[in-house]
Image 1 (cartoon, helix red, strand yellow):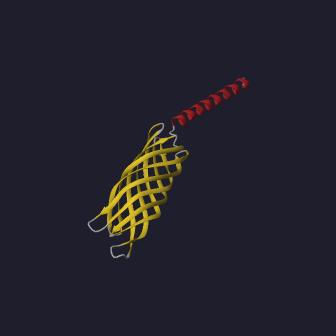
Image 2: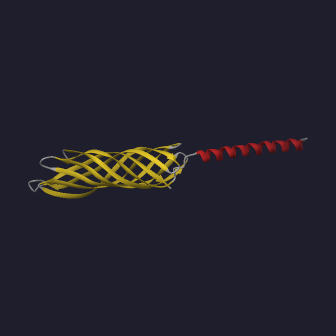
Image 3: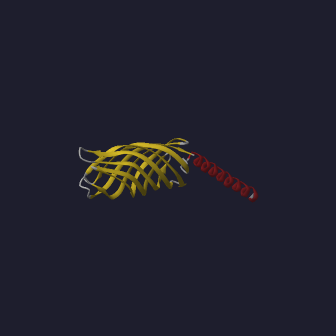
Length: 197
């Protein structure tokens, strides 16, 4: 009798463990996997300032990166390059940002097929200031912001994000031939699509 009871208990425990394993496997198979490499395109618009000048315009670029995932926590890195039309043009002077590039760390939380994240890193921009004289400057600064991604298919991810580019001050030549310092900042709003490998 004792032998039969022990055998029965072992069977119950084995059945329970099998059920738990199956449930975990089903949960794992249903979990959205964010880990892996991706590449994509983005577009949007930016608003900012260069000294006392107000700037604005559209932009278009590409991004690529890699995500690591541990449960709901997702982190990784991304690089991007963006052709920019952010500028200010008046009758006496003009300022433009021709390119924006960045290398950023990203970290956030996944909720199924949605990912919210913050990002921070280094940025670079090519700028031009013209006031009789034309001056081109390549400047390195900081970029930070956040966004939301949605995986709408196993390999297709849509995103919306806001980034703040603090490029800092650069010296340009004004109409009198004197050096003038302009502090450049841009708030960029962009949408994108990526292919996840």
